Image 1 (tube, rainbow, N blue to C red):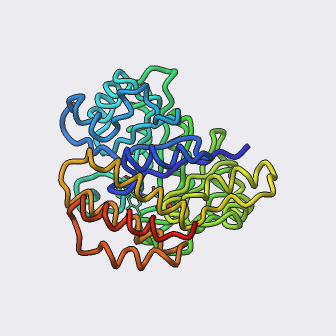
Image 2: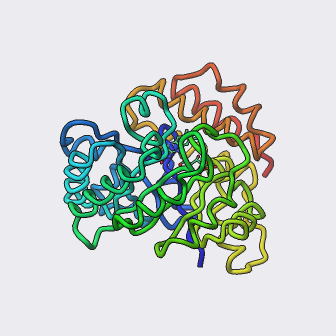
Image 3: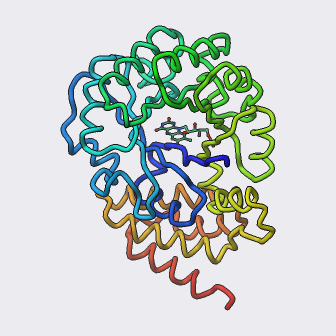
Length: 322
Ligand SMILES: Cc1cc2nc3c(=O)[nH]c(=O)nc-3n(C[C@H](O)[C@H](O)[C@H](O)COP(=O)(O)O)c2cc1C
């Protein structure tokens, strides 16, 4: 059966979002937002901040494992931090070779490393050796930095270093997040590697899911924006895979409840402006699926007081037809 991993998304897929979405079902695995590793061994508090689930057995309250993602270009420090987060109870470690941010790439981390397959190999190799064998070490890459000629070589370097799985976001760093995703470039990687290759990029609907598997030849997928914009997507995929012919997509009323639940969860996040920002960001993305979303957005876009936002959400919930 094809597994669905919820993509790591810095500033979007936080502990509250992971908790909420994994309760809906259909998500087999989560990956934390990246922890940028540069010079030192971080204290436990840093890892707990990015992945509070480390305190609950490395799982969300729905029981879905959360692998911790680390990012950096210096193998020894990466290995040291990976060993420590494994000690803290991470059920898996994922290495980020895909981040396109200029500030990150300028500092020798993320997608810039895709220009040197030997460096990818070295990082994965040292991390793998530092972490107990029973804890999986995986990696996530793009098809390249400015072009795709090293895609296969990079994938092979990662696999040869002992990664247990490779996720490929089917675009180069230069292609950013612009559609389309080039799923056809995943097929030679999938054919060449003995480890699972997870396809990622531009899966927004069940037909996209089918098409991605068909074109890429991959057995597993990772989905980011598609699940955020359509929270039922993983449930729809699960129903599709078991050929359950029932309507599992969510109505707006359900979405409104989820948004309210997320807002309640966010109260634990420091800084009310940040809380409001996260909520608005989600409501904006929901606009891709739900025509009601832009109107809700217009009602809260100037607010940041949690009480006032809650008032609007309650008003919207009361206004729903019974
Ligand atoms: C706002 C945002 C934050 C992201 N943060 C991360 C991250 O922390 N680590 C990572 O590996 N990828 C990150 N990504 C990339 C996603 O994991 C994923 O590869 C990309 O969005 C393509 O998948 P999608 O089309 O299903 O969204 C991020 C993407 C977005 C849009």
